[in-house]
Length: 204
Image (cartoon, rainbow, N blue to C red):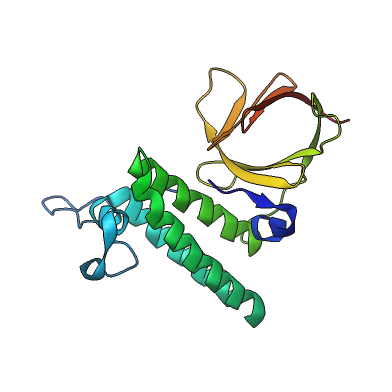
């Protein structure tokens, strides 16, 4: 779960892919991550090496990260390299989670979107401002990114910000992150923000 202050909004401003289909009569090559699995240490790195979906996410992240670093000035790139090292440690801490794979999957998808937004690899949509009952003094905005996989939303409440992903819903549009649910239906959004529940409508 990613939660950041607005001071980090510039950094915040998923993505499983299927293994290639093998030719008839040939076995599909196992997906491999961007790092050397012979040197993998710890439960999470070894899981990524065994899991084709996570390995594909790792390669996707490596591509997005390389493109981002290439486009940033040296000082920003240096800071993002440090951030990336911290992210790797956070990903590896997923061994503590009840569902290790889901934790690792979310870490990859969230980091990919963070980098895409921060480096301008995605076109930034106009944020939607909401007025919320029960939190009138707290600004609430949502920026919806339809070009990520899965679709995502950057939700900002006061000084806190998360990236949430489109989730199945019986109706409307529902986005979820750890501790957060944003569900918009017929012009009204229900927001559960770390156990604080708000009912919101877009400002006109």
